[in-house]
Amino acid sequence: MTNEKNNLYDELKYNSIQHLIKSVGKWKTDSYIEMPSEWSSNERYLPAGTTEYPGLVDYDIAPHMIEIVDNFNHEVNSIISNNNN
Image (cartoon, rainbow, N blue to C red; front, side):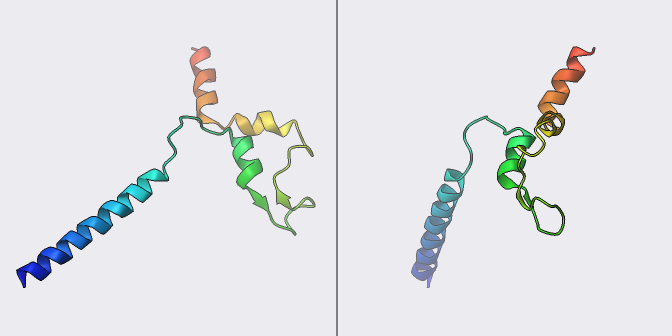
């Protein structure tokens, strides 16, 4: 029975390590953080019925919105607030 438990333990340990390696391998390793306008143009989908321009956010329609949206970035806001002090 103890041999069976040891085999089960070894199999569980091996599978856990493999899962951990695979999970860590998916982590982003660069320090680049997309600006909100970049993220929204790649990820934010506007469904039909909520806008006359359904699909991914397209700043070609309103290019002035890029600066407004990017000001929601915490890094930009911290730079602005540090410069005002």
